Image (cartoon, rainbow, N blue to C red):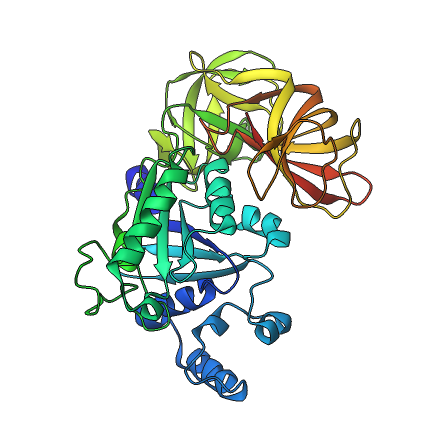
Length: 424
């Protein structure tokens, strides 16, 4: 497989998407319908959910059981934890993150959506745009998810009304105009009946747009990755010291963004030493060019002291370097944040320690207003912090680069991940 083929495989064929919506909007049912109608369910899986549906007294097969695997989820008919499912069609491969709708599980949605190319925001056609809809749209904007698909579900319960659909579209777009969402699509569906999910509905002939499956198969995601800024965080230094490779020194890692070519003039951070790319090794092959997000081993013309956590970048295109950083965060842990507290910080392959200097503001998750007075940050809270690291980080803003612009904080006492952060 050559480099170009590998790039197409990694960036064009795999689409990650997440579902978001209020409780009972039909997220799990929609995923079940996608899997069922696209023939991505094994016979034994189908038999199992048919039996489970009969035991619960349901009139129809409950397709939501394909993702709701926890006993508490099945008993209550809700999603509690993020459930990941993989399926494929002849056009593309997919990884789905089915996330909870409850306010108290905001952290779970942030986790599931952090790597997504697209977000499916479900709206119950009977209830229209509600607070939870606005909350999930805000989180999709905060996480810079490139594509948002608003699925107006349960159209069968409003007699497939075009007026209801258009009213919801108008209200949502009025709010979305304030957010940084690049690409929005609206589809009227019935996950329960299968209308416009995989197969086109015969009961909504007024809708001339694509079905959800067609959109997922054809939405262009080639430009979702940053192809301009070459960023190569070093994960491991390879020194075989064997008879075949007595002097080999390679730097292994995953190209976070951009491209690197043989002969490129590069700089190693934080040392600042310059060199040129001698070779790009991929398994047993040598490549002329590496594309994000390929995992490769790079060798340089000069012997430079490089270790895990260092970053190789182009000489004329460097990231920001600072110890004082502002971040938007979602707090993930039950233990509240300690102002002035010290935490371990993981950024790409680099690990440093940091101190929380200040809480700039906290966002009211219900009204989306900024609260400048409340300095407390608890589980599921979203806000803006100022931190200072023990040594400089080399980073881009999250808006520019989702890989080098993201980080996590870890409680050193418990080793638990307490916070997901996006560099402003």
